[in-house]
Image (cartoon, rainbow, N blue to C red; front, side, top):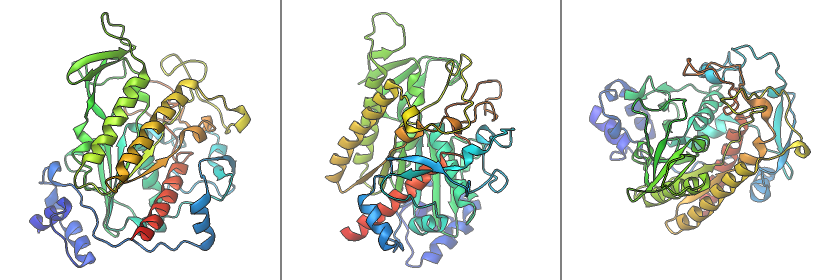
Length: 419
């Protein structure tokens, strides 16, 4: 049984009976704890494409609507879940648990200009991903979205933690839903490429100098995602640290490093090269047949100072469109991402790969009210800062997974037509 289940996760064993697939996986979870993580790669599903029940009106909207152009509107229904109905919220984003007194930030939802954005439907989601796998690759904001998804799904099914060697590490988690044979994973990679902290004690929240090898991918994720069906990739805030850039093993410049005799390069140089390497790696994975989504840059909302200089984000309402003043440097990062995404999408088509853009940047400028601020407990308890980077759960980040489900339905419809 151990041999068969391991082969199943590696894509080397398939059963003609889907229920046998679920049986093998669920009955072997204990045995699999003895299997190295490198052996537990999930395979592309052999399940046929699900026949998603999409109404005629929704089908038309899938064809024409730009869901990322719109505005926030009042939502009397409120959030999908609470911190009492979802027990998977980590303290860092558990704003209500840690005393946030206002709740108006929970009573808004996104309304596209041209259509209605369908509310998240966990049953529809599970039908799309039955027998499949999904990975979130990036930093703690990527993990934040994954945790939002866990809570959105909790009303229908709860997962088993099969994180193996990483059980105590929230940066590398694997959740399995046996009822749907669905694997959900998160891979910590804040730069997407190979990175080394010059501090011998490793990563800290001090501003340590980082060495980035812009042409070498981070194998912490690239060695794991080849057999995943959906990969959501993102990166952002860590690029504001002082960075030394390497290519072909040689220093080619740095950003904010203040080192003599090294070419001063902008953050955008490193950001572009990192995404280019990440997308090239995905395209070159021989067995990869999944759908890749780029989740665009998520803006922070520090006011009256940076994160380490007393900045806060205490607003309680969204901004109207005419109140938004986008930071130019964030928009430049966003445009850099989109340019690399478009190039990757074009090249990917030559291999029959499919890409999607989860465009969250401009819409999240409207939500300075959605951050934990001081209503959360950081994982690194010695550090006391206001968190204006991550998002409360429940909160505005749940919209990202409404977008994700919408794009997955659209891709499923396109796949059905192709086949």
